[in-house]
Image 1 (cartoon, rainbow, N blue to C red):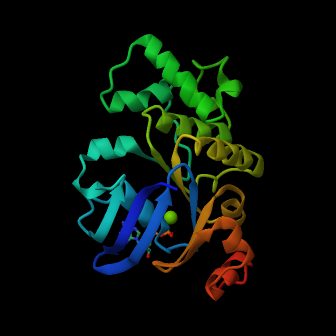
Image 2 (image 1 turned 90 degrees about the horizontal axis):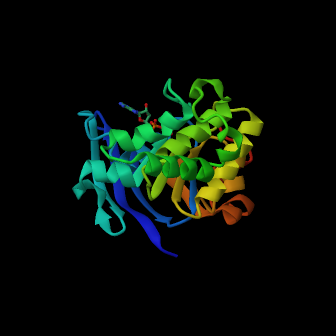
Length: 250
Ligand SMILES: Nc1ncnc2c1ncn2[C@@H]1O[C@H](COP(=O)(O)OP(=O)(O)O)[C@@H](O)[C@H]1O
Ligand SMILES: [Mg+2]
C-alpha cells in the first residue's frame, strides 16, 4: 500500500472558529476513500484544503500539514498542484460549447499547447476513462448542454482527466443526479481508481459502501472513525458511526 497523501494534524478555521480539528488521514494510491457525514462536518473544507482552494480566503486559517508523495502541498507551485489534484463539484457545469471543446478547454486554461491530433487523442482518452465515449463519440461537436445530467457530470470528469491529474476530489458528485445516472458515475469512479487516487465526499451512506475501499466518518469537524469500508459498515467501532450508518442519527 502506497500512501499518496498524508494529512498530519490538520486543523482549519474560518473567522477563528475551528471547523476541522487535528485530522490525521492517509489516502492510499489507486484507492477510493469516501468521506461521509452530515452537513457542516467540514467535508468540503477538507477537499478544498487538499488543492488549496481556500488560499485566497482571508478568513481561512490552516494548521498542520498535507503531504503529496512526501512533499508539502503548501510549498508547491499552485498551478502544478492543481494539475495534479483535480476537483469535481456537486452540480455538473458544462461550458456552453461542444463536447469536444469542453474537454480541450481545461488544458488550454493551463496554457498547455496541443496539436489537433494530440487534442483528438486526449479527448478520446478522457471520454473513455470517464465511461462516456460510447455514448457521445458520434456527436463530439454538438453542444454539451444537450446531453443528460449524468452525461454532463461524466463530461466534467473527462474535463478533469484531460489535464492528466493524479488525484481526483469529488464533492457530492451525484447529489443532483437520478439513480441511473448515479450508477453510471459510480461505475466510472470504480474504473478511474485504476489510474487515479480518489477522495469522494458523499452524503449518501450507501454510495460510500458501494464504491469505496476505505470510509471516513466526519462529525462536526472531527474524524470519528476511518476504516476499510466493509469493516466500518459491518462493525463500526464508534456509536456515532453506527447511529449514522443505520439512519438513527440526530
Ligand atoms: N467560506 C466560508 N466562510 C466561513 N465559514 C465557512 C465557509 N465555508 C464553510 N464554512 C463553515 O465551516 C463549517 C464546515 O463547512 P463545510 O466544510 O462546507 O462542511 P460540509 O461540506 O461537511 O457540509 C460549517 O460550519 C460552515 O458553515
Ligand atoms: Mg459540503
